[in-house]
Image 1 (cartoon, rainbow, N blue to C red):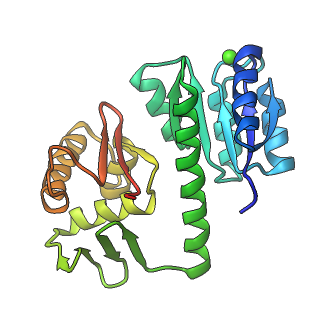
Image 2 (image 1 turned 180 degrees about the vertical axis):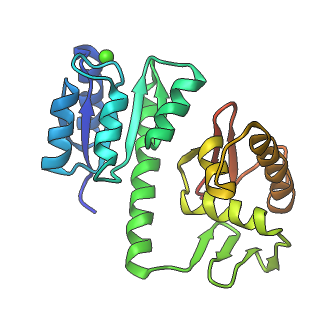
Length: 233
Ligand code: CA
C-alpha cells in the first residue's frame, strides 16, 4: 500500500496546521478542506484513504458530511471534535464515523488512531482478496462458515447470540460499535431492555473469551458508547 492519503477537514487554521505538520513528519500524503462542501467534493474527486473530520464547520455540520460521504463510500472517517458528550460521539458513530477523538487531542493519540484505521483498511482489503471465511486475531479463530470459534486449540462453547455478537465485532475489528448499532444488528431493534441484555451477553461472552474478563484483551468497552474488537498483536 502506498503511503495513505488523508483528507483533513478543519476550519481552525492552527489545528489544521498541527495536523498537517504531524502528517508531513510521518510521510503521509494529505489534502485539506476548511468547509464541509469542499470536503465532500474532495472526498469524491480524490478518494482519500482516511478522513479527519471536524464537526463544527462554517457552512454545514460535520454530521452532514459523514452522511453525504456514507451515501456512496465506506472510506474511514475519524471525527475530531470539541463536542465531548457521549451522545455526540454516539450520533457520529451511528451516522457512520469509524472513530472519535475529542479536542484537545495529543499528536501521539492522533497518530495511533490513524495507524489503527489504516491497519483495519488493509485487513479489509486482504479479506476481500482472499474472501476469507476464517478470522484470526491472536489466539482467537472464528470459522464463519462452520459457525464455530476457537481460542487456541479449544472450541468456545458459545450460544447462538454470543456467536453472532462475536462475529459482528470481529467483522468490524478496530471499529467502535455503538450499543444501538449492535442491538439493531442482533435483535433488529434497540430498546432499553435490549441494551441491558447486550450487557449480559457481553459479560457471558467475555467469560468464555477472555482469560481475565476484568482486563479484557479482545473486546474493549467504551463506557456509555459501545464496544470495540481490538486487533491483538
Ligand atoms: Ca471547527
